[in-house]
Image (tube, rainbow, N blue to C red; front, side, top):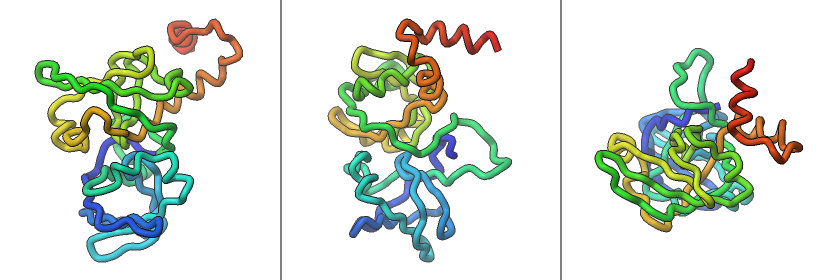
Length: 202
């Protein structure tokens, strides 16, 4: 499990034959799980100031591989007793999103992201979503995507400062939204407002 709070931006040293080697301050052990741009991967080699993870062909098919160069987000898996601040993230990427519009909005920036309709059902207004491993709040759900409002601190310390219109990103929807939807999906009339009422009754 992860929280969606980025530990650091690691530098990509190489990516060859399915092996991604990163230079980072963080020093993992072989076998450790670490989220790289939101995808949970296993450390297979450790050097003095770098470590290597392996990406299967299946992983590479579902990830926004264009972002696995220069720098990447890394977050080690949570340990028992760690402070919990973001939201529960599994490191399982659901789909790739496409940034379609970036708009300055006072002291923040709005990012509009489109995703496949099958996954939009798990995006909830004011719910959580993970973008390339970053835990964020959904401000608005649209017909074919959603809007995020990002503060300067987040932009300055993540890959958001490099994203442009047309950039692709890894998306992990909220785990609880997926579970709740599948629990009640037989009832086509159920809305998220009704789900809120059901959850509030417990």
